[in-house]
Length: 293
Ligand SMILES: NC(=O)c1ccc[n+]([C@@H]2O[C@H](COP(=O)([O-])OP(=O)(O)OC[C@H]3O[C@@H](n4cnc5c(N)ncnc54)[C@H](OP(=O)(O)O)[C@@H]3O)[C@@H](O)[C@H]2O)c1
Image (cartoon, rainbow, N blue to C red; front, side):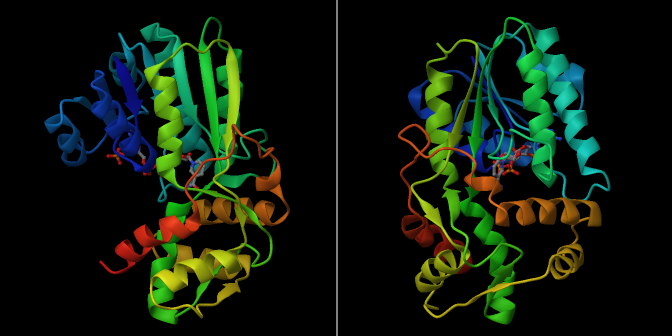
């Protein structure tokens, strides 16, 4: 039995599809029944509930050969660190109570430190807790910035005809398609013969600047001259809160972006194991499809 916490999301959903296509037994955990039903129809066992409930999570993990875990966000909370720690502690309790001993955890680049990592800090704290567990084999995947994050630029492109954010236009950093994360994660889930605690960063095919990314995505939507404008942290915080994100989360995200401008996402080494195949040029057709909906 392969179990995926967050199995209806970007990474979890794509991983779930690969596992189902392989014919293996799959259990999916998430809160919303409507999205889970899609996977139930394809043969997955579904468990609807909140990952903050350790007893629910224990029963959802039970009898699994391997579990993929993550700490999903809550963009409305006024205390993102507590939100992350509540899920983190619940996962650790459920690991202990259920007796499972193989985990694939979706962390993030930046998961090596809590310092100035904003929304990633809770993942770094969870990595530390996983490291302290006895008799558990863990693969910690540290993917970089998702290409899917660019969907968040669609409103500003549509309303102001620019792309913009806190990230520098000039600093190149790694970007990854979530389907590449799913490919790697599913290999560990289908052959869970790993032992001890290992960490693997996932960095996409190469580094891109925001200016270059904007040009690639702009070309895909018929706007080859689309400009990227660097915005001040406070401008981005105001814009995010205007869209319903809590001030606490907006500040935490901006903290991460400022650190990315200082090189945080260039910390991991690019090599054969960390480089994945999907270029932004290929992903841009997915972006155009979503943009045109
Ligand atoms: N975005 C990035 O650039 C980036 C980069 C590196 C790492 N990451 C990490 O990657 C992880 C996966 O990202 P993603 O984009 O795949 O996430 P996502 O699309 O937001 O999916 C989150 C999944 O978790 C479920 N979920 C949310 N809250 C839950 C709760 N309280 N209890 C149970 N299930 C819950 C969601 O379904 P329901 O809403 O129905 O519960 C969904 O299935 C994130 O957690 C983040 O830490 C992100």
